[in-house]
Length: 329
Image 1 (spheres, rainbow, N blue to C red):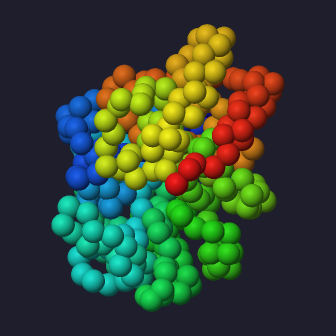
Image 2 (image 1 turned 90 degrees about the vertical axis):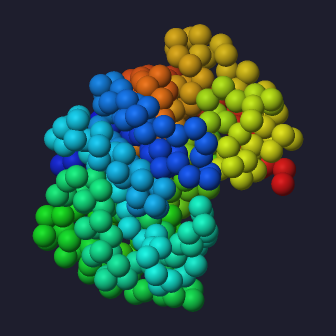
Image 3 (image 1 turned 135 degrees about the vertical axis):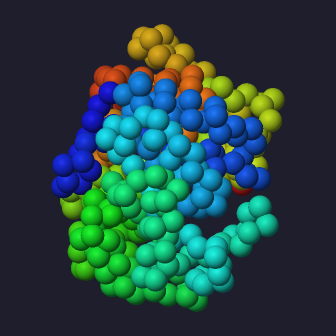
């Protein structure tokens, strides 16, 4: 496994982390089983992963509770723990975000709600500190919270020792400039995969220029890039929302993956491992967060952290994904 520092901190996190959105369950994800998820987290750590990413918004705290149970068994000192604030559902405070499982959520990064959220997360996770604390979504109209207020609350929590590194998720470079005007952020968490490379234009260069880590979510496009999804696969609601999962687009992706079978043989790896290895080889992209609810998948993802692809194969794979163009909507 490759380990890389988080920003300018001394936090060393595995290049391949485990994402726990699906572990939260709910209407978006079918088949979640807490005991199985805990075994998957154990398997991930045993295989070299130490970075676990979660959020209160994943199952309205349920993902954090499951992660907390696993950490109690694994040992807190073995984990680099990442969670978030900014998705609020206790009141109608903030800008409406969405409704899941009959509960409406709001984007809110007020100092008061952040102070409540951190205590709730610490309780659910069974710890007294968070290694990497992200603002999950940023303030948007009509309810705007000044970044100075948000950052002030985060810096205060950092001084108290409740968080080690401040980070942002789903933030553009303008927003990150506002954070840096108030203090230092060590990492950002955007969506990125070989099918979704938009951040290569701005966020990746920005992160490299500011010595920030990039923790990319959805690097396997919710399973599409594992090579396990066929045209006949029944997908979850969360997967069905993706343009690339639509039949006319899915067929093109499957054909591209079929063309890489020689590479999986060359490196003695699975298609998912090949894709993960390619992703963490991209300039500026330091970590990937791969979801896993089963032991086998967690171990498979972890093994990708030790694969070294040749420069020629990295270039050839990029040419193939660029040839796909954009998904048909």
